[in-house]
Amino acid sequence: MEHIVVIGAGQAGASLVAKLRMLKFEGQVTLIGEEPVPPYQRPPLSKAYLLGDMTQERLYLRPADYYDEQNITLRLNARVERIDTASREVHLAGEVIAYDQLVFATGSTPRKLPAQIGGALDGVFTVRDLADVDAMADPINKGGHVLIVGGGYIGLEAAAVAAKKGLQITLVEMNERILQRVACAETSAYFRALHKENGVDLREGVGLDHLIGEGHVSGAKLTDGSTLDVDFVIVGVGIAPADSLAKDAGLKIENGIWTDTFGQTSVPNIWAAGDCASFPWRDAQMRLESVQNAIDQAELVAENILGAQKTYDPKPWFWSDQYDIKLQIAGLNTGFDQIAVRDTDGGLSHWYYAGDTLLAVDAMNDPRAFMVAKRLIEAGKSPAADVVRNPETELKDLLRA
Image 1 (cartoon, rainbow, N blue to C red):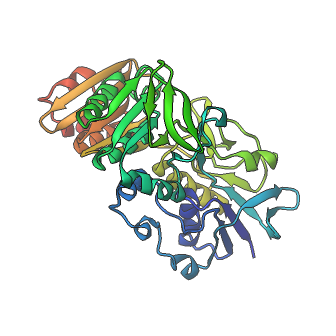
Image 2 (cartoon, helix red, strand yellow; image 1 turned 180 degrees about the vertical axis):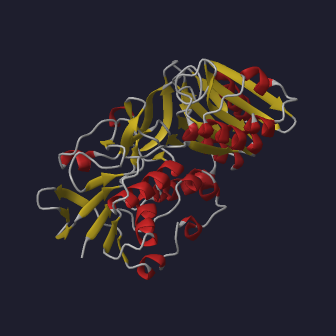
């Protein structure tokens, strides 16, 4: 009986094993996860769960008994030590699991502050998994002064939660503006104003020089020479693909675990999906860090393991919740040279163009703009920027053009 083993019990791994059973695969399925809990949603960790508005059980992607019902062997609290690709074996501590097909769904890991600048002090947190967020629940609820390092979406979402909890917040971003890597200046300006309105001391073009403290963090020196007394620190400076296990096994690494357009890695019978995997897109190896990609890519790999031979054509979309604002993003803005700002009574949206080609949209509390733009991008349609800017334009008419 064929045995499919999946390493990584996050969104991609859980989606893949569920898809295998949905496709009536009757062989053995084993899902291996390092955490002690069943697969769960990660986006609410830095939002509803951190606020205390969502219980742990509500985070679970499936009821705990789903895996038994579907005859999926769920190995929790299990760390893979190495892969023997020649003998097709996964080595755990004191145990060897043979596989016929192996999938890496190992996700990503948060970038941490170096120990030499205080990253190893107590009271310094990242926001990536359940244990991270549980660890910071006590200081978040106690109040005080939090330093947030990084003005990307994770840092800004953490700032929004801290503001709702009534904390004093300083957020530093070493680039000249928040969201610089991922969004246009107009979107940065919108969220800068939003956070300042909510009391966040937001400092752009300022980085962290080092943290201060003996055992526990008590302060920070910034690159502009200023110092702060702080009670704890949240670090949101990006993530890296969790590809070391694959690298040690001899798989090709290129911006994560290299895969072809089918999700197959450089080693036969081994596949990859989710944050850890890169795939061909516009003459490069692309990685997408999103829930939607984890699900879509994992389900496609499940189909291809069973012989479908489908190519991966991503249709990216993302979201971020901050205060009472829902930011919805469709498409990828790489290479944009023009922004069309659409400001109506129904909401605000920023449309990214490269020449005359629509690439992406940022929609702030404007679900209609998001849905229309998403459909336009997927259909390869590009309404003129001036038409989009005109508040009199009916968005639904753009779909019929």
